[in-house]
Image (cartoon, rainbow, N blue to C red):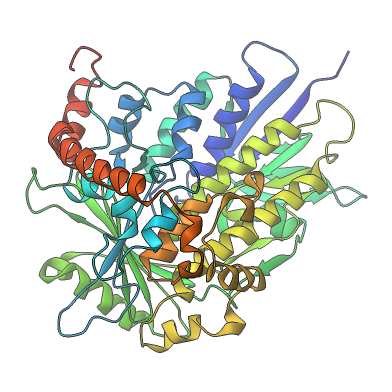
Length: 517
């Protein structure tokens, strides 16, 4: 008979409580007696909310945990997120003229054969619609401030793909409630030390309130401090600042002018001299932050940039500076300890990859977990997969910077060939003659699909020359009919879907109603 194993999660927040809830649900610890999960959380350490946005994968995670969508949204001040609006990323604004492109969560409409992209590329650049608007109607819906679903479409479903914006502190409370209901033991206490055994593994952790605590597997969710994986086990940290230059964020929250002010259902990402701002609409306020490079500006200048973006009321707001180093641990599972969340790595808030990497890590821990035998048996495979996924995320994030035509030093430095990863450079060279496709990527190692790359490439004006192969795409008439149908669908959707603000209010007050069609 197998002996019982114990998992000790050190640290709360989104990473700790999501890991606790997911593993408790996956292993059904309330019904079987072979595994205990304990979470140690210090009340003295606050949660850093960097981004407060997610990717659509979070819907499957919340559904798996058995969390009611309406309750989750109500308790976390959540709103819907249908994508990201990138403003001024391509060119420096001149004479008050601004440009933008949209990265929707909805995949492009599909037509037989090669899909719609080649036919869009072969259209007249001067008259064709922006790529995201041509191949899906989500841009039209989002910019009309409509929601991605209707009140009668129940939990985690709807006609358009979506994620959420939320208050990360409140999210941790929701996840903690669910984890404890699933059988996770919660200890409130402060870590004061870590003792290693003669092999270099963790023998025990020491706390002020509970003395020594032991486990078979320790999960480090202590954030940037990386108390276990970094300080105790000295797992090396691999900086990627040669590719991703931003290393600081200055953040604040601002109330709406009116209780009925419209809420955008996308993140607004606006480029500035030495970085970019995020602007996220929650229920009662907007979360705003400026992500920037300390090599290209000062904290004082960055704060001035943020306040200038916010406008006249910015003088009333308190700001907070959060330093970070973009990079990851090259070994995230060391002996009997595995890092999840910021302790394992963090790139920057762009594209909300922080929560995605938490989801990836905990799902792999669940699937690879050894119920007997060496606890570190999956370590090599886990480390290999996590490193490859981080490297692929670096490529995707760098794509946003490498294609910019902005004139400031921060942006010019981002286009220098030495700052572009080799793999991305190779792909960009290939994509000059054919568009990205699914064979460019291995699904299990990617957080973003090939069409996500397409949205960024062609939103930023990248040129793919298919003119020499025009005869290889004979279905132009059918493609034009599909393009027209997408426009028609968008017109209908903006009439049929409720306003984002109205749906949020109804969800908070009444939840979803299957009879409200």
